[in-house]
Amino acid sequence: MQGQVDLFGQAMKLFHKRQLAEAAPLFAQAATGPARDIAHTARTHLTMCERRLDQNAAKPKTAEEHYAAGVALLNRGDLGGAFEHLREALMAEPAADHFHYVYALCAGLRGDLNVCAQHLQQAIELEPRNRGAARSDPDWTPLARQPAIRELLHPERRENG
Image 1 (tube, rainbow, N blue to C red):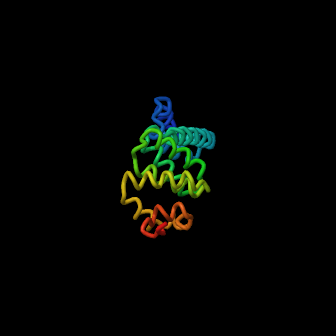
Image 2: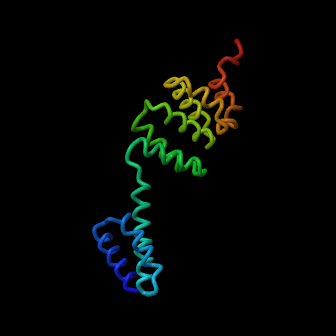
Image 3: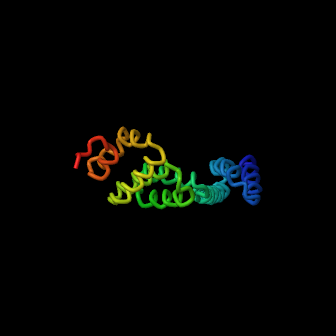
């Protein structure tokens, strides 16, 4: 039991210094000890550490962090959250072709084909290899059937008018 008390004491010192990442594993260990009151308090503090760490991690600051958050949300199917993070990334760095590429994909999956086409075109203009990337990216398959997107992905197929 003394080990549990010592662990909890060390964790509390770190907690008060706001060293939450260091305190959390000590609280987790103290939560498994025999003294139920200390274990309960350790679990409570562990939860507080985890929530605060998650909040800090969830607030992207740079354009690349917004982009990464947007991609992660897109992969989980949270199109609304992804769209907001990708928009923030684009506002901060409007010349980043990969931001336009993923923003276009997200817009298309949300059903906004006009925005999708505009940003896919921008991504291709900034980096022509994005055309080939979208052609081979399975995420683009349902969108590639849409006329505006198909024309961007396969300009060689345009009919002579």
